[in-house]
Amino acid sequence: MYSYITAIAVLVLGGTLIFWLMRNRNQSNRHKPIVDPQKTIIPRDKHPVSRRHINDNALKVINRLNSQGYEAYLVGGCIRDLYLNLHPKDFDVATNASPEEVRRLFRNSRLIGRRFKLVHVLFGREMIEVATFRANHEQHHGQEKSRHSESGRILRDNVYGTMEDDAIRRDFTVNALYYDGRDFSVVDFCNGVDDIRTGTLRLIGDPVTRYHEDPVRMLRAIRFAAKLNFNMAPETEQPIRELGHLLRDIPAARLFDEVLKLLQSGQGVRTFELLREYQLFGPLFPATEHCLKEQDRHAGNLIVESLKSTDKRVRQNRPVTPAFLFAALLWAPMRRMARELMDQGMPPVPAFQQASMTVIANQCSHTAIPRRFSMMVRDIWDLQIRLERRQPKLIESLLEHPKFRAAYDFLVLREQSGENLSAAGQWWTEIQELDEHGRYAMIKSLSSHGGQKKQGHKRRRRRRKPRSDDTSSNNNQSGES
Image 1 (cartoon, one colour):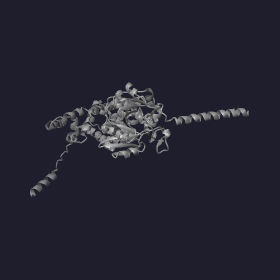
Image 2 (cartoon, one colour; image 1 turned 180 degrees about the horizontal axis):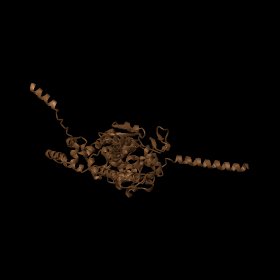
Image 3 (tube, one colour; image 1 turned 90 degrees about the vertical axis):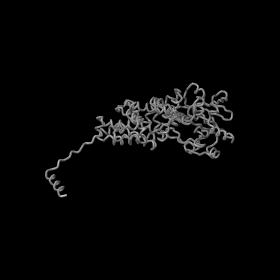
Image 4 (cartoon, one colour; image 1 turned 45 degrees about the vertical axis):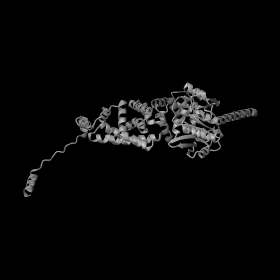
């Protein structure tokens, strides 16, 4: 009997021990990438990266670091873009020098960040970002260097290591390419060059773990897939639809910046399609996603038309404003709320104003819109009612309004998306092309239209006839005078 009980106890204890060992093994492997770095050095005559296309100040930074005995390389998107014959916007540097050492070496620099320490080396208005090689977090020594949330998100990332460590800590294989300014070679640890040739976007390491470390990597996957016209590797794309909820833990200010990168990159339409396909648009714009799911045809059309306009301006190197884009993205939920308020008896103008404030305030909890942009969004929306009504006395002042052009462009996009605005967009287009006399004629013609006449017509006060005693009194007064 006792031997039987003893055997059962041994089995239970053994099972518990095995479970504990496996659990700790999983915890210890939590931040170990699957990729085993295999260093490949590609000589200058075997790659297309030329110094002629590299920023002079970026070359100055790596040469200065090398001359002081440090390792330093151009890394990431700039090398990827040069491989693809694109023009990089930024040039980043990776080095084994600590942030403090870089700061001491460049007087024209500043140390930034606590979660992820960096150095910005400034050349007038131009900035070169310098980062120290990062390593796996199992090598950390205290929370001042490494810290994670309960979901696995990296809260602090100041664990330094070797160049190999740094390569496997990067997000995608195509971003783990290093340019050596000493012999002009490219160093590839993760077969990034092969993925560039095949047009494959592949995450380094275990995708689920890497997305938990930083959920914004899912948005970066969407952005690069759209920008580079790459296909995501199956293991890279598979977890995204299930992990979109992790974006709720990301600070709203950071998500605002990511939205601008996503939708103002010149591939906004394709990016919007991918965000919806992978169910990442909802966590960014929940109220708008609700309208889209309810088959609000105008909502989707307006967003696509505004993104087409933005993509065109980006390709032409013309300025774009986030306010215009957010006005389009949030128009449907704002209009819906305004209609609900009007159904409750609120007049149109107060209803629009109340809905505008509420929708923008709610959106700021997901993507923090800076005040200078949110105020412009409200200006664009407020002018829509006036532009639709075309009241004769307000035409000249509307044409001179500082936000008229943005509001007019928005009105035209609304018509292009299918809204019936009684040809208001065409009317405002025509009046801007006329001289003073032509404008006067168009404004005067508004009074002859029933709808406009009704809005501008004032009821005449009926004159009261004087009584007989009043008449005699008045006559007497005039006679005495």
